[in-house]
Length: 275
Ligand code: ATP
Image (cartoon, rainbow, N blue to C red; front, side, top):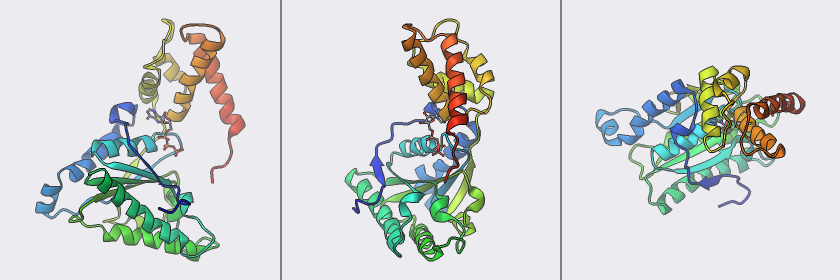
């Protein structure tokens, strides 16, 4: 396999229980996955097989986690890559990488004796942006075209079932062709968590941490409006660091308070435009 290609193969140990909140998104995914699990019924009823799912939402809201949970739920190999891996100066390289990505998915499923493979493409807008709108648009066009060719070429009778999951926070700039029926059929919206979602995420990320009695996760959830899952994970970690610095065996409410300030500050100081 081309070593320039950043596609990584891994085993997913993430379950849907590890994802806090996002109930609608999780339910939509589980419902869609029935089609993958019950392939014989899908075949006999002549239903179009599910080829692609698009996860759309802001950074750090658990899109990667969801893709991993999907892979585990349908007992499949997990191949992950990013749209930026397909951007090359040389014509044809991006398209070649797309072909290799699908080959790799089939190969690793074979090797692991699995019938399913999940290909996760983060920042898919980089490779699937509207055609003809980039300065080097020919190269992008070829890459996106190859992705469409691969999707269209997948059939329910294939030995290995591939499910492609794309993630984007710019669904508005995706080429419409990619979202057409039979390609990325399902669009699952993921959003910043609400208060209950934040509470659940905090529970998940503090489950292995010693919390002092004065810690009220419900209250912390109230005070962390607009925090993403990634912020909350970082908050739990920072609070533990504060406890360590203070030589405390438990993480106290005061450590969480300091940590909230720190995460909020970091957000302001580090905010750079995403490419
Ligand atoms: P990006 O768009 O930046 O790639 P993403 O939406 O794919 O982000 P993830 O990579 O899944 O986000 O999330 C980053 C980390 O934040 C996760 O590893 C996890 O620790 C935490 N996290 C995010 N959302 C959740 C959630 N709903 N439940 C639990 N943890 C979460």
